[in-house]
Image (cartoon, rainbow, N blue to C red; front, top):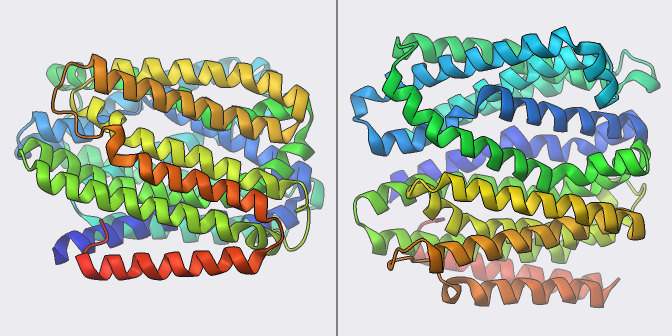
Length: 463
């Protein structure tokens, strides 16, 4: 039990370091870059994520399946082989981009220099993610945390040093170079280290196993990115960079809950796959109930406190209209969290094509809703479009796993989570109804926090 708590603690801390610090430093960059510069930075980062997903084939997503499929002594060979596949794919795609860099630059509305930096950062991001995933599923939480700490600190220090040397209109470039240099300098050695450990560049059965799982996962991850961030790209195209900056600063604060979800999910998933494989259903369900309870309490506490926190987060700038966005953002993340249970069940049974199909359908719906609702309601419409799309995604995944997959032992029925979901959305309504009654909301949040701490103390495990 102590080992499980230690693994959970370090995995959560590593994700918070890698993603959370950027959230908490966002107000600083928002003030330094201004609305337009901050908006340009957000659009750049979205395209980095697209390249990292498509060009590298997202082979790190197959590492957990490889642990089920292959013996322990084959793991490093598999990892180096699929890393070589990712590097080959990335190199070929990058050459194409560089050959047509002018048209690509015009299409994305970003300079050629930014396109080159985008490629560097995208590969580094993939390599660091590959290393983190490897450490998580090998239960090497200390190494995972150290990797995250180095990336976070170096990127932050270098970015601020560069920004302070640039004029206001080009300060965003300092943050871009800081990120690209950090991920490039750390990601490339990480990739080489994986290759050196496994000493396998090509093995046909490894590549075949990986491709079958990875290709649908690319469409899933890309569609998930569209589902989560197409609102910002469409705001840029339909309204402008300044509105993207205003929207993104609220999105960044709400993203705290996505970071926490990712940290808890990366802690829960290895145990889920391991315990299902070993037939330990009761142990798996106990961790699932703890996961569900903890994330629900954290989400409720966040939305109860966030209106006032947002005012401090933006240093009093640009808070009046955008406060209304925050409960909608967190609702999207909560619906995405509920998708975790059917999606991971589908991954365990290798139904990656279904995962991809559902995400693609939801992302296409999101594009349509964005177009309609942004035109009608502006930034509020963009947030609502994402929440409605995540609700559709959850419904489709649940219907498939519960009624169409053909597995009678599906453990994550509505009875598991409907009370938690009802409590969460009741609190969302309460936030909108209570308005400026912050003392009432903070009092409920404090009581809820104490209750959950006592629950954790009683069960002696976080998850």
